Length: 295
View 1 (cartoon, one colour):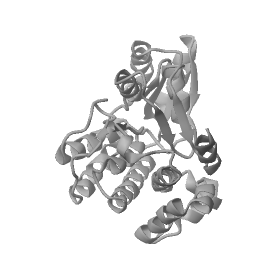
View 2 (cartoon, rainbow, N blue to C red; view 1 turned 30 degrees about the horizontal axis):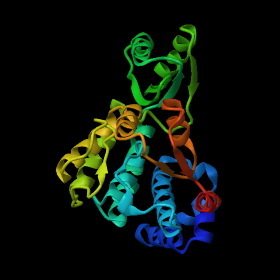
View 3 (cartoon, helix red, strand yellow; view 1 turned 90 degrees about the horizontal axis):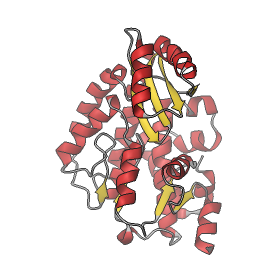
């Protein structure tokens, strides 16, 4: 993950080398070579994705694919909100990396403390998902966690409740799939992680973003530094309103250009579910950068 950026972009290479220095560990080797099992654990995957996404951005700027002065807004899904806030000028790369590393550690601890998980439900609207949660909850935590796109909502909760949700959703005619995640992210089961993260956020000075950055919790632009901190704490236990955020961004202008900066094409796929005609580019590899530059 990110190896081709490292090998082909001095700007991206500097991001990975800086991350290794800040964390005091060889994060780049884990990104490039694994093992996959360790990389997929949330205490590692969160800083890894943050670093790779920032590296992709720096490489894109260096290649002339993105001109920072032309960017009108940043948004990121869950962890990606930290990348968006850094790029928007709310905090430095180093501070963001330390926060993301702490976030991953505390969320991993919360996940280990309570057997829990997440289930993606396809084909259901918000009302139908609320009904599934009410029926399958059975006294356990089970809540909507990600409003990703029309007909794609993820629920989060106790393991037993997630297992019941699979059956309830399928009985109602929807497709349901268990996600390979460490725990019930964006649910009340992450409260211990949210409490610890508040102390970490309070140690860092946040600036109002110089470029508009959207909140996962409200699907609206962030405000001052203290309100950003409050929303980042809330984000850990609240649903991510990604579809609503994208609809707001789309409404800003028909001529908008969207660029996904991440080690994958997840957001580009969701964007096409939200609006098939949306002009979106995914910069997941250095080859994609070269193709975009040639185009």
